[in-house]
Every structure is written in structure tokens, then in C-alpha cells.
Length: 95
Image (cartoon, rainbow, N blue to C red; front, top):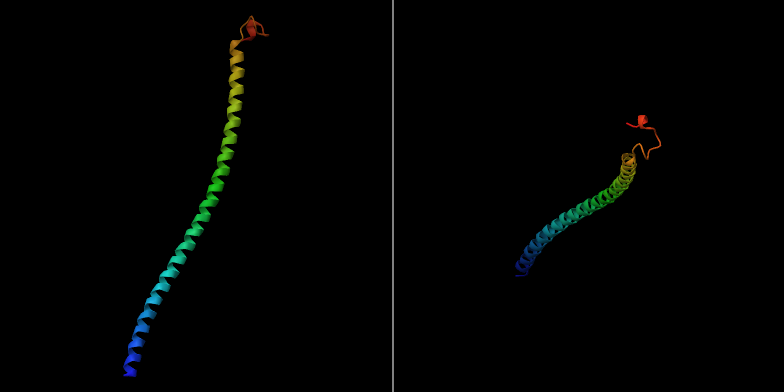
């Protein structure tokens, strides 16, 4: 009778052990997936920082170009407004 009870308990323990092994395997897979997500998140953060840096540089260069173009437009508008009466050059020198 005792032997039969021990065998039944051993069977139950083996079943529980199998369940625990499966749970551990699942846990290990989940931890690996989480670590991969953390690596991907860190990479995205690095890329975001680089994108912000490049975007700031692009904006700075665009502002410089706009300032140069505004100066050029002002210069051309000033030249366009000149005629022989208000120009410092003689009429033959304009053209």
C-alpha cells in the first residue's frame, strides 16, 4: 500500500516537474525577447538623437541660406531700382 502511494506521488511530482520545465523554458524565451526589445529600443534612441542632431544642422544651414538669399534679393531689388538719374554710373556704363 505504501509503495503504491509512493509511486502515485512520484508520478505527480514528475508531472509537476515537466510543467515547471516548460514554464522555465517559456520564461527564458520571454527574457530573451525582452532583452532584444531593450537592445532595439536603445538603438532607436541612438538613431533618434542622431536624427535630431542632423535635423538641427539642416535647419541651421537652411536659415543661413535663407539669409543669403534675402540679402541677394535686397541687392538685386536695389540695383533694379536704379536708373541713370539715381545711379552713380553714367548711362553708357549701365546695362
